[in-house]
Length: 256
Image (cartoon, one colour):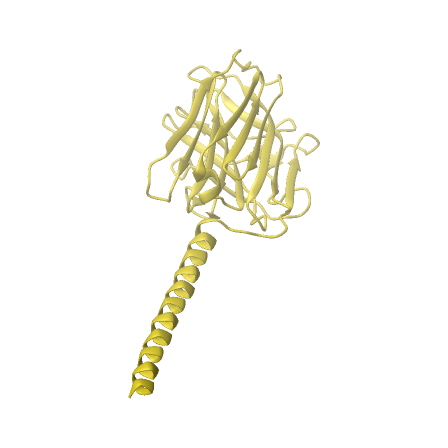
């Protein structure tokens, strides 16, 4: 009798232990799946760059210097506008009185974006300042706007200020992480070249602009990391704003 009771008790203990192990395994699988969905972990990333300074005037290239394909889109309500090379720079010329934007996006870099940057100018306008934008996202689609999925980096630079924001998904608002004015306004003369650079290291992002060096920390930078880089030109008032133009752009996937 004692042996029988002990066997049943041992069997019950084994069943409980097995159930607990199964719960741990299932929980770990779900946790890993969540991480993979929200934080792509490529072992080796690639670098893309495009130098437009020696290119002839005409349509923008559909690829980066290394041959990697680029996705290009412009505002659908301004059909007369296209990304193009003008005097050795990638730019556009919106005609709408409302907002306008043009996008030049990388393919999947194979791992989360570890850094991106641009050399650029602002061409003069008769209205408010335009902006250049550097964005990291989970995906790219061939419809406007092209950025899709979570956005761990949305970095906007105007001639007078900058800000960086994040968004959980396509239909969620941008949350501003940091914003500041530039120590000196950037010239909107179409000639003075400036550089913007982002270094992304987990939850830490380093911002470098003329006269500005800032280190920002937010867990969403790493939780929502993406493997696509997009370079954008934006205007609040397309026909009159100053217009950004890129001399060179680049982005690098992590190479851990």
